[in-house]
Length: 102
Image 1 (cartoon, rainbow, N blue to C red):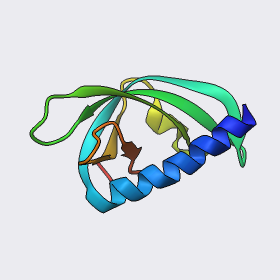
Image 2 (image 1 turned 120 degrees about the vertical axis):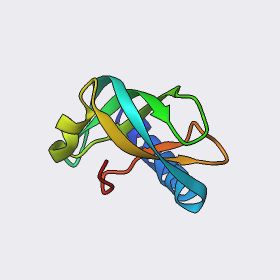
Image 3 (image 1 turned 90 degrees about the vertical axis):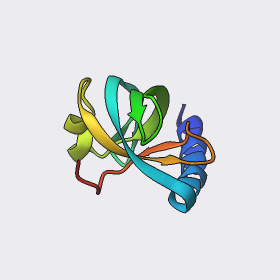
């Protein structure tokens, strides 16, 4: 399990570069949030089912596993809306933009 979370973190780093390079701002509604049991620096890895909304596109579902800082756990409860950034080249590459207010 630990090996998979680190591989996933490497993939997320590559995805982050893609999103930063050509991303578009949007929002996502958290449909479900489940802790995976893995911890990275005492922060839980969480499986999120999101309904993503970006300009000029109907809402669409995306699932992602990401490490969430403990201070942000309340922000990813089902029903919450979070700011996201979505890669133009692949709308399934979604990152929560913790720094951007809604």
